[in-house]
Image 1: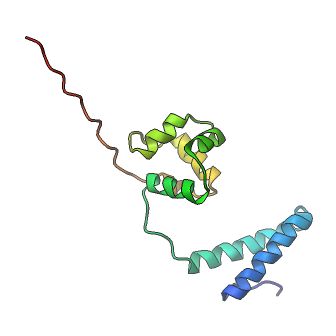
Image 2: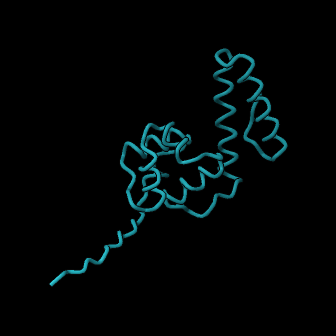
Image 3: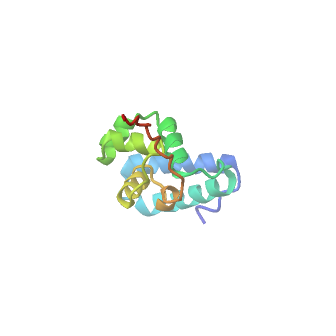
Length: 133
């Protein structure tokens, strides 16, 4: 058998290099092999990489923006939403709509459930109004 379940970091690195070579050499001709390597690599990562504490969707989005060195404006343009929407989400003023969940999951190549968890919004502070007598 050409490929087996990844057992250690050396084998993981080897498979990653092969994956990269096949992808850039002739993607269409090597598609089956590339997909098999992706399955093996993903399975190894799921098994060995320590995932950060479970984040709510806002914490996850903040983390992804930082990791991808991306601004709110860049993200908004890429997923075709307003910058204000991203700002409101990051400030816990708006929930993620179904369409935004799908756009974010697709943009960051994640499962939709990662952005589809409950989180509490911050209550808007009401300005006190003085009544004149």
